[in-house]
Image (cartoon, rainbow, N blue to C red):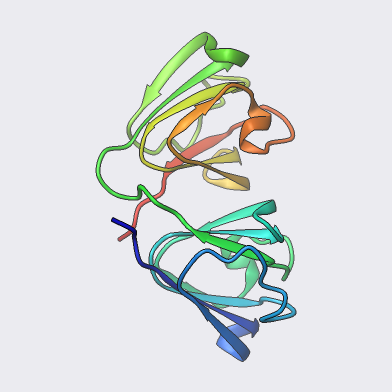
Length: 175
């Protein structure tokens, strides 16, 4: 069963200016608005991208209001594509590895973890067994975000990271 979602993009801060409502995946948003300074997520969980066709920096948003781009940890006011995240309820399980191709020290998680750096210097591969997860470059859910959905990731480049540093991880849940 396909999940439903609704997100509203506003060109100006505090939900002002031209707005665009979106209820499904959209590979190209620049024809609907030029900049994005605030967002309301009315339902669903979404991943936003700075470039068209689901490329560039990612931002994961769940139900709530974001009156300016810093509230979703945005680097700027550029959002060019978005898609609805599936598998945001039920069981969550992820297995991380310190080396590529599922080698080296391994650990399983079923809950959020605000700091991985005390256990792993680097994470080179992982298997998302259930649910959708976000890797953050820094502890306490800060820095660049990477969405990982069910599947195998043999190298950190498979989740579009530039390097294997993962400081924290969090489940993507709808509330």
